[in-house]
Image 1 (spheres, rainbow, N blue to C red):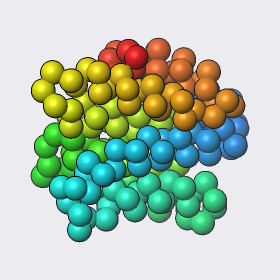
Image 2 (tube, rainbow, N blue to C red; image 1 turned 180 degrees about the vertical axis):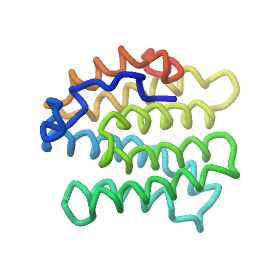
Image 3 (cartoon, helix red, strand yellow; image 1 turned 30 degrees about the vertical axis):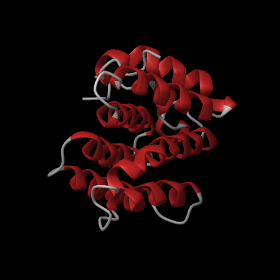
Length: 171
C-alpha cells in the first residue's frame, strides 16, 4: 500500500475540499509520467509488443492536455498494472510505475507510487551488489526533474510516506 490511511489535503483538489490547484495536479501527473517513462525501456526490452505501460504514460500526459478524461487515464493505468501480473523484477515494477502515473489523474497522491516503483525497477535491473546505488541514482534523477512549483510538496510527501514506499526515497 502506497497511500496513507488518512489522505493529505495537499493532494486533494480545491473543488473536493483540499488545497491542490489544478495546475499543481497537472505538474504532479507530468512528473509521475516522466519518472515512469525514464525506466520504461526496462519493460519494453522484456515485452516489446505490449503497449500498455507506454499508453498509460501517454494517457497521463493527454489528461493534462485535456485530451482524455480522468476515467480514461485511470483505465489506462489499470491496464498498465495488468501488464505487471505475469512479470517479475524490473519489468513488473515499470508496469506498476506507468499505471501509477496514469492514475494520478484520479488521485494525485499516486505520484509517489510512480516514483517509488521506478526506483524499485532501477534497483531490480542493477547488477548484483549495485541495487542500492542504482536506486539512489534514480531517486536523485527524479528529484532533479521536479518542477519548482511542486518540489517542496513532493519532497515532504517522500519524507512522510517513505516508510510505506519501501524506504526508496533515502537518497
